Image (cartoon, protein in one colour):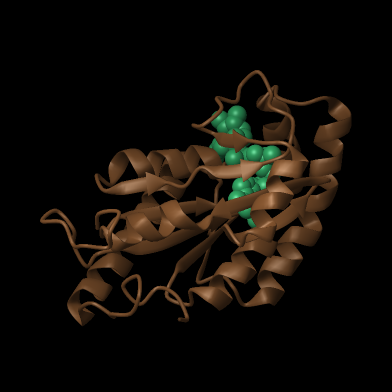
Length: 218
Ligand code: ADP
Ligand code: 5GP
C-alpha cells in the first residue's frame, strides 16, 4: 500500500497482528526478536515510551523515546492504537506504521503489556496473542538481574508487578495462547509453530476484507 492507499505489487493478504506479552524479564524481547529473524516478513513494532533510556536501549530500534508532553499530545491526536502506564511510565503503539504494514501483508509484532493487549484484542479481535510465563518466580528474578539493566530497586518493583500481571492476563481472556519459557530454544520453537499454524489457517480461509484486511473493528 502506498501513501495514497493504492495496493503495491508486493502487497499480500497475509497481514497478521501478533501480540506478545509477559512479565518483565520473562524473555519476551529475546523470543520476539528471534521470531522476527525467523519469519522473513515479520516486523517488530517500535513502541513509543516516556521511560528513561538505558545504556542498552537504541532510540528508534528498541523504543521511540519521547517526553511526557509529546506523548500526551499524540494521545490527544488519537495517534495510538493502544497506550498504557506501566511502572510509572507511558508506553504506546503508534497506529499508522502498524496499519500500513498490516495492509502490506506483513506479520506485525507488538510486544506490549496486558493493559495494551486487552485494548488491542477489543479493537482488533483478529490479532493472535501470546502470553509468556516464567517457569518459576525465582527464575524470573534471576533473569531480571541477568539483564544488568536496572537498579535492584527497579528490579524489585518490576518483580512485584509480575504476579498481578499473570493473574490479569489469565482473567482477561485477551490471550489465545500461554507459553512457558523454561528452555529458551523450546519456547522459541513453540512460538514459531503456533504463529506459522495460525497464518496457514488464515491463508486457507482467505482475506477478511475491511479497512486493513479485516484486522480492526471498523
Ligand atoms: P523481557 O523482554 O521479557 O523483559 P528479556 O528477553 O530481556 O526479557 O530476557 C531477560 C533475560 O533473561 C535476558 O538476559 C535473557 O537472555 C534471559 N533469558 C531469556 N529466556 C531465558 C531462558 N529460557 N532461560 C534463561 N535465561 C533466559
Ligand atoms: P520495558 O520498560 O521493560 O522495556 O517494558 C515494560 C513493559 O511495557 C513490558 O511489559 C512491555 O511489554 C510493555 N510495553 C512496551 N511497549 C509497549 C506499548 O507500546 N504498549 C504497552 N501497552 N505496553 C508496552
